[in-house]
Length: 430
Ligand code: ACO
Image 1 (cartoon, rainbow, N blue to C red):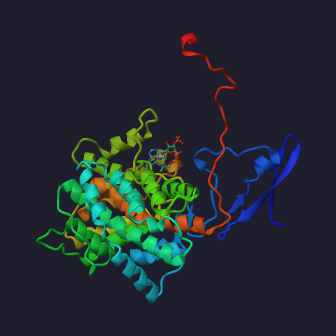
Image 2: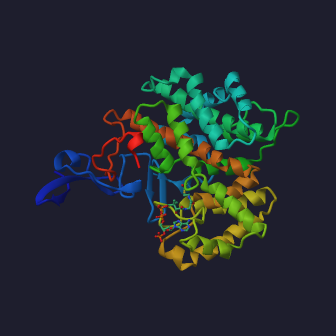
Image 3: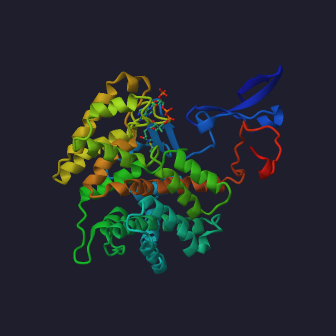
Protein backbone atom coordinates (compact mmCIF):
# COMPACT_ATOMS: atom_id res chain seq x y z
CA UNK A 1 0.00 0.00 0.00
CA UNK A 2 1.27 3.50 -0.85
CA UNK A 3 1.26 6.59 1.39
CA UNK A 4 -1.89 7.34 3.33
CA UNK A 5 -3.20 10.36 5.22
CA UNK A 6 -5.24 9.83 8.36
CA UNK A 7 -8.33 11.84 9.16
CA UNK A 8 -9.81 11.52 12.62
CA UNK A 9 -13.47 12.53 12.96
CA UNK A 10 -15.45 11.96 16.16
CA UNK A 11 -12.67 9.70 17.35
CA UNK A 12 -12.86 7.45 14.29
CA UNK A 13 -9.85 7.17 12.03
CA UNK A 14 -10.22 7.25 8.24
CA UNK A 15 -7.35 6.41 5.92
CA UNK A 16 -7.12 8.42 2.74
CA UNK A 17 -4.88 7.32 -0.09
CA UNK A 18 -2.15 9.68 -1.27
CA UNK A 19 -1.32 9.64 -4.98
CA UNK A 20 1.76 11.10 -6.60
CA UNK A 21 2.12 12.93 -9.91
CA UNK A 22 5.08 12.41 -12.23
CA UNK A 23 6.75 15.59 -10.90
CA UNK A 24 6.39 14.46 -7.29
CA UNK A 25 3.27 16.50 -6.39
CA UNK A 26 1.06 14.68 -3.91
CA UNK A 27 -2.71 14.62 -3.57
CA UNK A 28 -5.02 13.19 -0.94
CA UNK A 29 -7.85 11.25 -2.56
CA UNK A 30 -11.12 12.32 -0.93
CA UNK A 31 -13.63 11.12 -3.51
CA UNK A 32 -15.05 8.38 -1.25
CA UNK A 33 -15.10 10.47 1.92
CA UNK A 34 -18.84 11.00 1.86
CA UNK A 35 -19.43 7.29 1.56
CA UNK A 36 -16.93 6.29 4.25
CA UNK A 37 -17.14 9.18 6.73
CA UNK A 38 -20.36 11.06 5.82
CA UNK A 39 -18.29 14.16 5.10
CA UNK A 40 -17.64 16.34 2.08
CA UNK A 41 -14.60 18.56 1.53
CA UNK A 42 -15.34 22.28 1.28
CA UNK A 43 -13.02 24.29 -0.96
CA UNK A 44 -14.76 27.29 -2.57
CA UNK A 45 -12.99 28.40 -5.77
CA UNK A 46 -11.15 25.06 -5.67
CA UNK A 47 -7.99 26.60 -4.22
CA UNK A 48 -6.56 23.25 -3.06
CA UNK A 49 -8.64 20.81 -5.05
CA UNK A 50 -7.40 18.79 -7.99
CA UNK A 51 -10.37 18.06 -10.25
CA UNK A 52 -8.64 15.44 -12.39
CA UNK A 53 -5.36 13.76 -13.26
CA UNK A 54 -3.88 15.13 -16.47
CA UNK A 55 -0.78 14.44 -18.56
CA UNK A 56 -0.98 17.55 -20.77
CA UNK A 57 0.63 20.53 -19.04
CA UNK A 58 2.82 20.90 -15.99
CA UNK A 59 3.08 24.14 -14.01
CA UNK A 60 5.24 24.83 -10.98
CA UNK A 61 3.85 28.20 -9.92
CA UNK A 62 6.45 28.69 -7.18
CA UNK A 63 9.34 28.37 -9.62
CA UNK A 64 7.62 29.87 -12.69
CA UNK A 65 7.81 26.63 -14.70
CA UNK A 66 5.45 25.80 -17.58
CA UNK A 67 5.82 22.71 -19.78
CA UNK A 68 3.65 21.30 -22.57
CA UNK A 69 3.81 17.50 -22.54
CA UNK A 70 7.10 17.87 -20.64
CA UNK A 71 8.67 20.43 -23.01
CA UNK A 72 9.55 23.79 -21.37
CA UNK A 73 7.63 26.68 -22.91
CA UNK A 74 10.90 28.49 -23.67
CA UNK A 75 11.80 25.82 -26.24
CA UNK A 76 9.08 27.03 -28.57
CA UNK A 77 10.55 30.53 -28.70
CA UNK A 78 12.73 30.06 -31.78
CA UNK A 79 10.91 29.24 -35.05
CA UNK A 80 7.53 29.04 -33.32
CA UNK A 81 4.90 26.87 -35.00
CA UNK A 82 1.46 26.92 -33.39
CA UNK A 83 0.20 23.91 -35.35
CA UNK A 84 3.02 21.69 -34.07
CA UNK A 85 2.17 22.74 -30.53
CA UNK A 86 -1.55 22.17 -31.08
CA UNK A 87 -0.78 18.65 -32.30
CA UNK A 88 1.55 18.03 -29.37
CA UNK A 89 -1.06 19.07 -26.82
CA UNK A 90 -3.92 17.14 -28.39
CA UNK A 91 -2.17 13.95 -29.46
CA UNK A 92 0.58 13.81 -26.83
CA UNK A 93 3.61 13.86 -29.16
CA UNK A 94 5.30 16.18 -31.62
CA UNK A 95 4.10 15.25 -35.11
CA UNK A 96 6.50 13.61 -37.54
CA UNK A 97 6.56 15.07 -41.07
CA UNK A 98 3.76 12.84 -42.39
CA UNK A 99 1.53 13.56 -39.37
CA UNK A 100 2.23 17.26 -39.65
CA UNK A 101 1.43 17.34 -43.35
CA UNK A 102 -1.77 15.40 -42.80
CA UNK A 103 -2.94 17.70 -40.00
CA UNK A 104 -2.01 20.84 -41.99
CA UNK A 105 -3.92 19.55 -45.01
CA UNK A 106 -6.98 19.01 -42.81
CA UNK A 107 -6.70 22.57 -41.51
CA UNK A 108 -6.48 23.92 -45.04
CA UNK A 109 -9.44 21.94 -46.32
CA UNK A 110 -11.59 22.98 -43.35
CA UNK A 111 -10.88 26.70 -43.39
CA UNK A 112 -14.10 27.76 -45.15
CA UNK A 113 -17.33 28.29 -43.29
CA UNK A 114 -20.56 26.89 -44.66
CA UNK A 115 -22.09 29.71 -46.73
CA UNK A 116 -25.27 29.63 -44.66
CA UNK A 117 -23.15 30.10 -41.56
CA UNK A 118 -21.48 33.12 -43.14
CA UNK A 119 -24.90 34.80 -43.30
CA UNK A 120 -25.27 34.46 -39.53
CA UNK A 121 -22.72 37.25 -39.10
CA UNK A 122 -25.07 39.68 -40.79
CA UNK A 123 -27.63 39.08 -38.04
CA UNK A 124 -25.32 40.41 -35.32
CA UNK A 125 -25.25 44.13 -34.53
CA UNK A 126 -21.96 45.68 -35.72
CA UNK A 127 -21.02 46.56 -32.16
CA UNK A 128 -21.77 43.10 -30.74
CA UNK A 129 -19.02 41.87 -28.37
CA UNK A 130 -16.69 39.62 -30.41
CA UNK A 131 -16.52 37.00 -27.65
CA UNK A 132 -20.31 36.62 -27.73
CA UNK A 133 -20.18 36.11 -31.50
CA UNK A 134 -17.30 33.65 -31.18
CA UNK A 135 -19.08 31.53 -28.59
CA UNK A 136 -22.35 31.58 -30.56
CA UNK A 137 -20.62 30.63 -33.81
CA UNK A 138 -18.57 27.81 -32.28
CA UNK A 139 -21.80 26.38 -30.94
CA UNK A 140 -23.37 26.90 -34.36
CA UNK A 141 -20.77 24.52 -35.79
CA UNK A 142 -22.80 21.83 -33.97
CA UNK A 143 -25.67 22.63 -36.37
CA UNK A 144 -23.59 22.50 -39.54
CA UNK A 145 -21.43 19.47 -38.74
CA UNK A 146 -23.79 17.08 -37.03
CA UNK A 147 -21.59 14.17 -38.11
CA UNK A 148 -19.20 15.17 -35.29
CA UNK A 149 -21.74 15.19 -32.49
CA UNK A 150 -21.04 11.52 -31.86
CA UNK A 151 -18.46 8.90 -32.77
CA UNK A 152 -15.38 10.79 -31.59
CA UNK A 153 -13.96 7.55 -30.16
CA UNK A 154 -12.86 6.86 -33.72
CA UNK A 155 -9.42 8.56 -34.07
CA UNK A 156 -10.14 9.54 -37.67
CA UNK A 157 -13.43 11.24 -36.74
CA UNK A 158 -11.86 12.96 -33.75
CA UNK A 159 -8.87 14.25 -35.73
CA UNK A 160 -11.15 15.65 -38.40
CA UNK A 161 -13.39 17.33 -35.79
CA UNK A 162 -10.38 18.85 -34.00
CA UNK A 163 -8.89 20.14 -37.27
CA UNK A 164 -12.24 21.57 -38.28
CA UNK A 165 -12.56 23.48 -35.02
CA UNK A 166 -8.98 24.80 -34.99
CA UNK A 167 -9.26 25.88 -38.60
CA UNK A 168 -12.69 27.44 -38.46
CA UNK A 169 -12.12 29.39 -35.23
CA UNK A 170 -9.70 31.68 -37.08
CA UNK A 171 -12.16 32.21 -39.95
CA UNK A 172 -14.93 33.00 -37.47
CA UNK A 173 -12.64 35.41 -35.59
CA UNK A 174 -11.61 37.21 -38.78
CA UNK A 175 -15.21 37.43 -40.06
CA UNK A 176 -16.25 38.85 -36.67
CA UNK A 177 -13.72 41.62 -37.09
CA UNK A 178 -14.71 42.32 -40.72
CA UNK A 179 -18.37 42.47 -39.72
CA UNK A 180 -17.63 44.98 -36.95
CA UNK A 181 -15.89 47.21 -39.51
CA UNK A 182 -18.50 46.76 -42.23
CA UNK A 183 -15.81 45.26 -44.47
CA UNK A 184 -16.38 42.47 -47.02
CA UNK A 185 -15.41 39.01 -45.76
CA UNK A 186 -12.11 37.72 -47.10
CA UNK A 187 -12.17 33.99 -47.78
CA UNK A 188 -9.25 31.85 -46.58
CA UNK A 189 -6.37 31.38 -48.99
CA UNK A 190 -5.31 27.70 -49.18
CA UNK A 191 -1.73 28.70 -50.09
CA UNK A 192 -1.16 30.38 -46.75
CA UNK A 193 -0.10 28.84 -43.45
CA UNK A 194 -2.26 29.06 -40.33
CA UNK A 195 -1.23 32.46 -38.94
CA UNK A 196 -0.61 34.07 -42.32
CA UNK A 197 -4.04 32.96 -43.46
CA UNK A 198 -5.63 34.53 -40.41
CA UNK A 199 -3.84 37.83 -41.03
CA UNK A 200 -4.94 37.70 -44.67
CA UNK A 201 -8.60 37.19 -43.69
CA UNK A 202 -8.30 40.08 -41.22
CA UNK A 203 -6.43 42.62 -43.29
CA UNK A 204 -6.47 41.88 -47.04
CA UNK A 205 -8.84 43.84 -49.19
CA UNK A 206 -10.55 42.68 -52.39
CA UNK A 207 -7.97 44.84 -54.22
CA UNK A 208 -4.84 44.12 -52.27
CA UNK A 209 -3.48 41.03 -50.57
CA UNK A 210 -2.06 41.73 -47.10
CA UNK A 211 1.67 41.20 -47.15
CA UNK A 212 2.64 38.92 -44.25
CA UNK A 213 6.10 39.66 -42.86
CA UNK A 214 8.00 36.77 -41.26
CA UNK A 215 8.49 38.73 -38.02
CA UNK A 216 4.75 39.30 -37.78
CA UNK A 217 3.89 35.69 -38.56
CA UNK A 218 6.43 34.48 -35.98
CA UNK A 219 5.10 36.87 -33.36
CA UNK A 220 1.56 35.63 -33.88
CA UNK A 221 2.66 31.99 -33.78
CA UNK A 222 4.51 32.63 -30.53
CA UNK A 223 1.61 34.47 -28.97
CA UNK A 224 -0.82 31.66 -29.80
CA UNK A 225 1.64 29.06 -28.46
CA UNK A 226 1.99 30.93 -25.17
CA UNK A 227 -1.78 30.82 -24.75
CA UNK A 228 -2.24 27.23 -25.95
CA UNK A 229 -2.74 25.51 -22.61
CA UNK A 230 -2.53 26.24 -18.93
CA UNK A 231 -3.89 23.13 -17.22
CA UNK A 232 -7.03 23.53 -15.06
CA UNK A 233 -7.70 27.26 -15.46
CA UNK A 234 -11.27 28.61 -15.37
CA UNK A 235 -12.09 28.12 -19.08
CA UNK A 236 -10.42 24.71 -19.41
CA UNK A 237 -12.17 23.49 -16.29
CA UNK A 238 -15.41 24.74 -17.85
CA UNK A 239 -14.72 22.73 -21.00
CA UNK A 240 -14.06 19.63 -18.89
CA UNK A 241 -17.14 20.23 -16.73
CA UNK A 242 -19.42 20.63 -19.75
CA UNK A 243 -17.70 17.74 -21.54
CA UNK A 244 -18.19 15.52 -18.49
CA UNK A 245 -21.91 15.44 -19.33
CA UNK A 246 -20.87 14.07 -22.75
CA UNK A 247 -21.70 17.40 -24.40
CA UNK A 248 -20.19 17.56 -27.87
CA UNK A 249 -16.77 19.06 -28.58
CA UNK A 250 -18.12 22.25 -30.24
CA UNK A 251 -20.57 22.99 -27.42
CA UNK A 252 -17.93 22.33 -24.75
CA UNK A 253 -15.44 24.72 -26.40
CA UNK A 254 -18.16 27.36 -26.86
CA UNK A 255 -18.67 27.20 -23.08
CA UNK A 256 -14.91 27.66 -22.66
CA UNK A 257 -15.11 30.89 -24.67
CA UNK A 258 -17.77 32.24 -22.29
CA UNK A 259 -15.59 31.55 -19.26
CA UNK A 260 -12.51 33.03 -20.91
CA UNK A 261 -14.40 36.26 -21.62
CA UNK A 262 -14.46 37.18 -17.91
CA UNK A 263 -12.18 40.03 -16.94
CA UNK A 264 -10.50 38.04 -14.18
CA UNK A 265 -9.47 35.52 -16.84
CA UNK A 266 -8.85 36.14 -20.57
CA UNK A 267 -10.75 39.42 -20.54
CA UNK A 268 -7.89 40.92 -18.51
CA UNK A 269 -5.89 41.67 -21.67
CA UNK A 270 -8.54 44.19 -22.76
CA UNK A 271 -8.56 45.82 -19.32
CA UNK A 272 -4.76 46.14 -19.37
CA UNK A 273 -4.76 47.94 -22.70
CA UNK A 274 -7.56 50.26 -21.64
CA UNK A 275 -5.63 51.08 -18.46
CA UNK A 276 -2.39 51.76 -20.38
CA UNK A 277 -4.28 53.94 -22.85
CA UNK A 278 -5.86 55.94 -20.03
CA UNK A 279 -2.42 56.54 -18.56
CA UNK A 280 -1.08 57.55 -21.96
CA UNK A 281 -3.89 60.04 -22.52
CA UNK A 282 -3.10 61.60 -19.14
CA UNK A 283 -6.29 60.50 -17.40
CA UNK A 284 -4.37 58.41 -14.88
CA UNK A 285 -0.80 57.96 -13.66
CA UNK A 286 0.95 54.62 -12.99
CA UNK A 287 1.29 55.67 -9.34
CA UNK A 288 -2.45 56.36 -9.09
CA UNK A 289 -3.23 52.94 -10.63
CA UNK A 290 -1.12 51.25 -8.01
CA UNK A 291 -2.76 53.25 -5.22
CA UNK A 292 -6.24 52.33 -6.48
CA UNK A 293 -5.27 48.65 -6.75
CA UNK A 294 -4.07 48.64 -3.14
CA UNK A 295 -7.14 50.40 -1.79
CA UNK A 296 -9.44 47.68 -0.45
CA UNK A 297 -12.45 50.02 -0.70
CA UNK A 298 -11.83 50.44 -4.43
CA UNK A 299 -12.94 47.49 -6.63
CA UNK A 300 -10.15 48.32 -9.11
CA UNK A 301 -7.54 45.60 -9.59
CA UNK A 302 -4.35 45.93 -11.50
CA UNK A 303 -5.23 43.83 -14.52
CA UNK A 304 -2.34 41.78 -15.85
CA UNK A 305 -0.95 41.18 -12.35
CA UNK A 306 -1.46 38.23 -10.04
CA UNK A 307 -2.28 34.63 -10.69
CA UNK A 308 -3.88 31.77 -8.79
CA UNK A 309 -0.99 29.44 -9.56
CA UNK A 310 2.08 31.60 -10.25
CA UNK A 311 3.66 33.07 -7.18
CA UNK A 312 6.64 34.01 -9.30
CA UNK A 313 7.08 35.73 -12.66
CA UNK A 314 4.74 34.10 -15.20
CA UNK A 315 7.19 32.60 -17.75
CA UNK A 316 4.80 33.50 -20.56
CA UNK A 317 4.88 37.17 -19.55
CA UNK A 318 8.68 37.13 -19.64
CA UNK A 319 8.73 35.72 -23.19
CA UNK A 320 6.05 38.14 -24.42
CA UNK A 321 7.89 41.08 -22.89
CA UNK A 322 11.07 40.15 -24.79
CA UNK A 323 9.08 39.57 -27.95
CA UNK A 324 7.45 43.05 -27.78
CA UNK A 325 10.78 44.72 -28.55
CA UNK A 326 11.53 42.32 -31.41
CA UNK A 327 8.15 42.86 -33.07
CA UNK A 328 8.16 46.61 -32.71
CA UNK A 329 11.71 46.83 -34.10
CA UNK A 330 10.82 44.55 -37.03
CA UNK A 331 7.81 46.71 -37.78
CA UNK A 332 9.80 49.91 -37.40
CA UNK A 333 7.43 51.13 -34.71
CA UNK A 334 7.64 52.51 -31.21
CA UNK A 335 4.77 52.12 -28.84
CA UNK A 336 4.55 54.54 -25.91
CA UNK A 337 2.31 52.01 -24.13
CA UNK A 338 5.29 49.63 -23.84
CA UNK A 339 7.24 52.27 -21.91
CA UNK A 340 4.22 52.87 -19.67
CA UNK A 341 3.84 49.12 -19.08
CA UNK A 342 7.52 48.81 -18.14
CA UNK A 343 7.26 51.75 -15.76
CA UNK A 344 4.13 50.31 -14.16
CA UNK A 345 5.83 46.94 -13.71
CA UNK A 346 8.84 48.63 -12.12
CA UNK A 347 6.64 50.44 -9.58
CA UNK A 348 4.61 47.34 -8.81
CA UNK A 349 7.60 45.04 -8.32
CA UNK A 350 9.09 47.48 -5.81
CA UNK A 351 5.88 47.94 -3.83
CA UNK A 352 5.56 45.96 -0.61
CA UNK A 353 1.81 45.30 -1.17
CA UNK A 354 2.58 43.38 -4.38
CA UNK A 355 5.84 41.87 -3.09
CA UNK A 356 4.15 40.44 0.04
CA UNK A 357 1.31 38.97 -2.01
CA UNK A 358 3.71 37.72 -4.68
CA UNK A 359 1.85 39.43 -7.50
CA UNK A 360 3.81 39.48 -10.76
CA UNK A 361 2.86 40.27 -14.36
CA UNK A 362 0.81 37.50 -15.95
CA UNK A 363 0.39 36.54 -19.62
CA UNK A 364 -2.14 39.33 -20.20
CA UNK A 365 0.11 42.22 -19.17
CA UNK A 366 2.30 42.50 -22.27
CA UNK A 367 0.28 40.52 -24.84
CA UNK A 368 -1.81 43.56 -25.82
CA UNK A 369 1.30 45.48 -26.92
CA UNK A 370 2.12 42.77 -29.48
CA UNK A 371 -1.48 42.47 -30.61
CA UNK A 372 -1.63 46.24 -31.12
CA UNK A 373 1.56 46.10 -33.16
CA UNK A 374 -0.06 43.45 -35.36
CA UNK A 375 -3.01 45.77 -35.91
CA UNK A 376 -5.49 43.75 -33.85
CA UNK A 377 -8.08 46.06 -32.23
CA UNK A 378 -8.45 45.92 -28.46
CA UNK A 379 -11.95 44.39 -28.47
CA UNK A 380 -10.51 41.38 -30.37
CA UNK A 381 -7.75 40.63 -27.83
CA UNK A 382 -9.67 37.99 -25.89
CA UNK A 383 -10.73 36.39 -29.17
CA UNK A 384 -7.01 36.01 -30.01
CA UNK A 385 -6.52 34.36 -26.62
CA UNK A 386 -9.36 31.95 -27.48
CA UNK A 387 -7.79 31.00 -30.82
CA UNK A 388 -4.60 30.18 -28.92
CA UNK A 389 -6.34 28.30 -26.11
CA UNK A 390 -8.50 26.14 -28.37
CA UNK A 391 -5.97 23.27 -28.77
CA UNK A 392 -5.68 23.14 -24.98
CA UNK A 393 -9.45 22.88 -24.59
CA UNK A 394 -9.60 20.17 -27.24
CA UNK A 395 -6.73 18.25 -25.60
CA UNK A 396 -8.50 18.32 -22.22
CA UNK A 397 -11.85 17.38 -23.74
CA UNK A 398 -10.16 14.39 -25.44
CA UNK A 399 -8.21 13.34 -22.37
CA UNK A 400 -11.41 13.23 -20.36
CA UNK A 401 -13.39 11.60 -23.17
CA UNK A 402 -10.75 8.86 -23.60
CA UNK A 403 -10.80 8.06 -19.89
CA UNK A 404 -13.66 5.60 -19.69
CA UNK A 405 -13.64 5.77 -15.87
CA UNK A 406 -14.43 9.51 -15.87
CA UNK A 407 -17.80 10.54 -14.49
CA UNK A 408 -20.10 13.52 -14.82
CA UNK A 409 -18.91 16.39 -12.60
CA UNK A 410 -21.30 16.98 -9.79
CA UNK A 411 -19.84 18.89 -6.83
CA UNK A 412 -21.55 18.85 -3.47
CA UNK A 413 -22.42 21.92 -1.41
CA UNK A 414 -22.81 22.85 2.20
CA UNK A 415 -26.40 24.02 2.47
CA UNK A 416 -26.80 27.20 4.58
CA UNK A 417 -30.41 28.17 3.78
CA UNK A 418 -33.68 27.86 5.72
CA UNK A 419 -34.44 24.68 7.53
CA UNK A 420 -37.86 23.10 6.86
CA UNK A 421 -40.34 25.91 6.14
CA UNK A 422 -44.00 26.07 5.16
CA UNK A 423 -45.68 27.45 2.02
CA UNK A 424 -47.86 30.45 2.93
CA UNK A 425 -50.63 31.56 0.49
CA UNK A 426 -50.09 35.10 -0.87
CA UNK A 427 -53.10 36.55 1.02
CA UNK A 428 -51.57 35.54 4.34
CA UNK A 429 -48.03 36.79 3.71
CA UNK A 430 -46.61 39.85 5.53
N1 ACO B 1 -4.35 43.99 -8.08
C1 ACO B 1 -4.43 44.25 -6.75
N2 ACO B 1 -4.51 43.31 -5.79
C2 ACO B 1 -4.50 42.03 -6.20
C3 ACO B 1 -4.39 41.68 -7.55
C4 ACO B 1 -4.31 42.71 -8.50
N3 ACO B 1 -4.21 42.43 -9.80
N4 ACO B 1 -4.39 40.32 -7.66
C5 ACO B 1 -4.50 39.86 -6.41
N5 ACO B 1 -4.54 40.89 -5.52
C6 ACO B 1 -4.59 40.78 -4.06
C7 ACO B 1 -5.99 40.39 -3.58
O1 ACO B 1 -6.79 41.52 -3.36
C8 ACO B 1 -5.67 39.62 -2.35
O2 ACO B 1 -5.32 40.57 -1.34
P1 ACO B 1 -5.68 40.26 0.22
O3 ACO B 1 -4.86 39.05 0.58
O4 ACO B 1 -5.27 41.50 0.94
O5 ACO B 1 -7.15 40.00 0.26
C9 ACO B 1 -4.37 38.89 -2.68
O6 ACO B 1 -3.74 39.70 -3.67
C10 ACO B 1 -4.60 37.49 -3.21
O7 ACO B 1 -5.40 37.58 -4.38
P2 ACO B 1 -6.68 36.72 -4.70
O8 ACO B 1 -7.69 37.57 -5.40
O9 ACO B 1 -7.12 35.98 -3.48
O10 ACO B 1 -6.04 35.70 -5.72
P3 ACO B 1 -6.84 34.72 -6.67
O11 ACO B 1 -5.94 33.58 -6.89
O12 ACO B 1 -8.21 34.45 -6.17
O13 ACO B 1 -7.01 35.58 -8.02
C11 ACO B 1 -6.51 36.63 -10.07
C12 ACO B 1 -6.13 35.52 -9.09
C13 ACO B 1 -8.01 36.54 -10.40
C14 ACO B 1 -5.74 36.44 -11.35
C15 ACO B 1 -6.20 38.00 -9.43
O14 ACO B 1 -4.80 38.09 -9.20
C16 ACO B 1 -6.65 39.17 -10.30
O15 ACO B 1 -7.80 39.57 -10.19
N6 ACO B 1 -5.76 39.72 -11.16
C17 ACO B 1 -6.15 40.76 -12.10
C18 ACO B 1 -6.91 40.16 -13.28
C19 ACO B 1 -5.98 39.40 -14.20
O16 ACO B 1 -4.90 39.88 -14.57
N7 ACO B 1 -6.44 38.24 -14.63
C20 ACO B 1 -5.71 37.38 -15.59
C21 ACO B 1 -5.12 36.20 -14.90
S1 ACO B 1 -4.18 35.22 -16.00
C22 ACO B 1 -5.33 34.45 -16.93
O17 ACO B 1 -6.41 34.14 -16.53
C23 ACO B 1 -5.00 34.19 -18.27
